[in-house]
Length: 239
Image 1: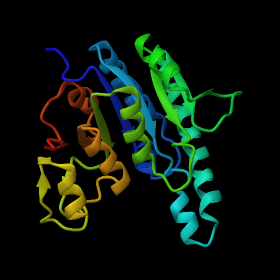
Image 2 (image 1 turned 180 degrees about the vertical axis):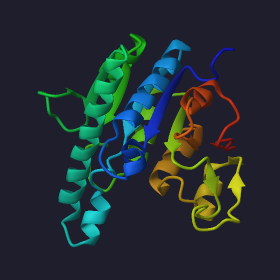
Image 3 (image 1 turned 45 degrees about the vertical axis):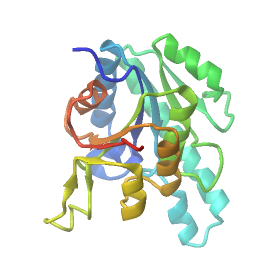
């Protein structure tokens, strides 16, 4: 079976990397993700990854406690870089060629983000991990995923979460929460669904980038999403 997408951006939340601990990094989780990404590459799909930093630091949380928002956001960008390096190490341990590209220059540990360089790595079947967000405060890693997907011409964004799709309310607190199988980005904005922030949703809508929200804790789901199997919630279909 041929994969549905040729090139994808895999968006992984920082919390997902923490595993059951809820904070920091869990080795088994990193290894599981690395093995699944390896399977996606073997299926003929080019993979770029955007990783969050919420398992280490959230800029917006720091600003709510009185910290300068710009400073707090820059700390969050550094947290995403720590996660990116950890994920790179796990991928390389599984024999996957990988490069970390950062929006904030730190040449001793990663390459600076240059669009053409990212495309060249992807064409050589290397996994590209985009770290440090967009390099600008006030923008989330969801927006980073949408922006990078548009820049590299990705066919879809695969958004890996700890829930199995998009609901009309929090399924953890509301047992009657309704799951959506398909949505448009206009629905997301109109209903104020907490899939991604409004900037990211608008960017995906305006650039016609579909998005699949799925549960990363179920083994093999990254490959299923990349192949186009009917899992989670599909966002797209804008007129």
